[in-house]
Image (cartoon, rainbow, N blue to C red; front, side, top):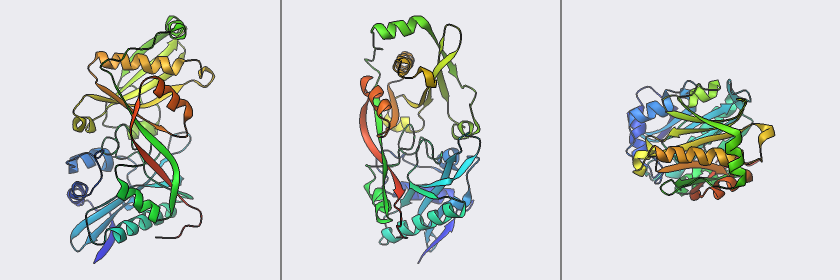
Length: 321
């Protein structure tokens, strides 16, 4: 008989087993271990055991789903008005659909009990802060097309597509920064510095990047004023599965008045060149379809989509599955 409960301290080995048995597609780290889950999920300061729902069949764990929240505008605490069910992981089972539906329903109940008015499906850069490096690559890109069974779980539960996220990669073996008059002018008027393990800029950034190695490229004018930054991370443990040295581009932040002046292209290209010099073979980043400017930037730099993910939103008036 299928029953549901929240996370217990003796669950990690069982959840790792469940992950290994489930069909999560090629973008999920395998083999999963308790240590990896501890580092990327359970150790986060905002982890709430009541948000990780577990399905059991007798004594056997047959599935789990994880619900959580993103940061407030100041990135100083959680914003519980918008919640998401990040992943629904179910082993092959004759009652697979019922197990998955029950987990989604209980995640929704949890999110609503904490004040959520908008319910999403899938993790993302601004939501959850779990599973980076375990599922999806440089960040968590919603629910990947390579996991169609998990996408179907949300569709059956009455969710609609909120956005599509492209997983982009660029091999650095033959990469050279673009050379044109604008790029040369920017180079003459700026200075680029590299900061390994930079100070975290907010509580949220400190929390979600704990345990991973960051490198930040800082572009400043000749007066020392920061114009923009690009932050990368050493993509472990997923890079080991790719078989290459990989870096994930987490964010590119250009000061508001400085946008649309070619600075982002220059900054990212110079950072990619520096990473290539240090032996990085591939850079990966994620871009939402709704972000046309970022899509154009990375296309010009030679990035190509290797897969896509979907962020879901619960349709108005949809009832429990």
